[in-house]
Amino acid sequence: QVQLVESGGGLVEAGGSLKLSCAASGSNFKINSMNWYRQAPGKQRELVATITKSGYTNYADSVKGRFTISRDNTKNTVFLQMNRLTPEDTAAYYCNVVFQYSGSYWGQGTQVTVSS
Image (cartoon, rainbow, N blue to C red; front, side, top):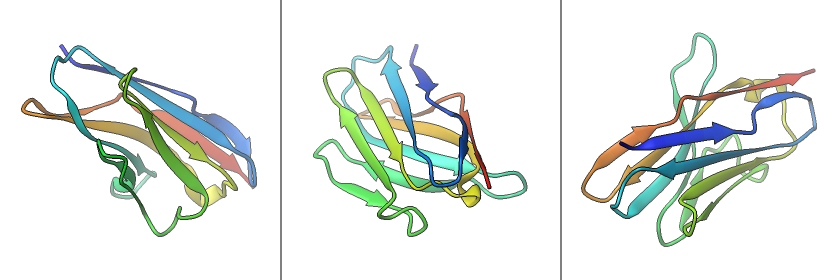
């Protein structure tokens, strides 16, 4: 049974930083892409950042230059370093892991709140 355990959310002042982590377990299949999404109240879930198994990264325009996605393949863990946070970054953040052959799985979500 695949499990994704997220950590690192919280309350931070505008201009501050947070680092999210998501550890995947329970599958013998290799991981293809690892992704972070976010969903603010009343808005659709949006893709924030992606990292492929080869290390290619892609970011939403709104976070480019401020957020950095990385992964530790030895621990099946993905990270999201978030710098220069603004109140517009306030949302529930979800990690999403796509396994080879066995599909896509979601974390439980972690709340990030940025105060002005």
